[in-house]
Amino acid sequence: MKRSSVFAAVLLAVGSACSQAQTAGEATTTTPTGLQTRIFQLPAGSHPHDVAPGPQGQIWYTGQRRGTLGIIDIATGEVREIPLGEGSAPHGVVQGPDGKAYITDSGQNAIVRYDPASGAIDVWKLPEDSGYANLNTGAFDGDGVHWFTGQNGIYGRVDPADGIVTVFKDPKGRGPYGIAGTPDGDVWYSSLAGSHLGQIDRSDGSVTLIEPPDAGAGLRRVWADSKGDLWVSGWNSGKLYRYHPGSGEWDQWMLPGAGAKNYAIYVDERDWVWMSDFTSNTALVFDPVSETFRAVPGSGPDAAVRQILGRGQEIYLPESGLDRVMLVRIED
Image (tube, rainbow, N blue to C red):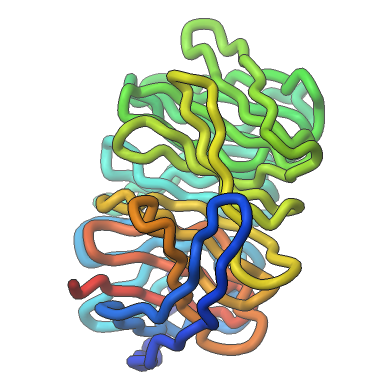
């Protein structure tokens, strides 16, 4: 049931990008220092979509085109795959408070849970009247309830205690994509097609919609920093946004270069903001204090880094176009 391959580990020189002033925040791009990268080659055709920290020393990834949960052992480089079921096409993965992997599986139209201790797999199908949701991403609230999004116009929740799945409709319809929990236990999602933020009321599942500064910005992913501010990627606008829930104010910065396509968002323990630009084939890290971007080039052409996550001084970049995961270590 499990397949393995030996990794290809390569230390890459982190390249520089041209320094240039930007409007909407006047951020600059500089050469990264104190960052090292290492590449894990995955089974051909994996198309790793999202990544997450697994048990200590492991990286989880969703093998979207192979219907698997991938497990990378960082120390040895071994890569294992766990088949998730017939028709599986997993999109997002996060680690729950119970240490298990929670996967949004668009192929099975279900939330799938994998227990790394026992190897058990639970499949919680969406209610039959939900239709095909095109499930995307999941996150946990402060009560340990798993919330998720579906691009076909839904968001929902499942309580691991009973496995009951409840689905709600986005008021604007198609688009719910990224989702994140905040330090105070609340949950927000972003809508790509609907181009809005949604603040979920955990008590009844209702949602309050927040509009961005730019119409049609294409808000793809969202993540909360340590202060509870929300960082959002603008896929259509090529911008990085910050929303302050307390004041309702927005900040915005243009990504470096022309025609940027900002896909991922992840905020690390330093409150540095990581994102991926499909146009320049780079992952970018943004320091909110200095308002400076630093660029980490893809390990090859058209790397297509999807959702970024990390743990401590480790950042995980899934290069879906190359069947690789890049590990970035912050050394300074």
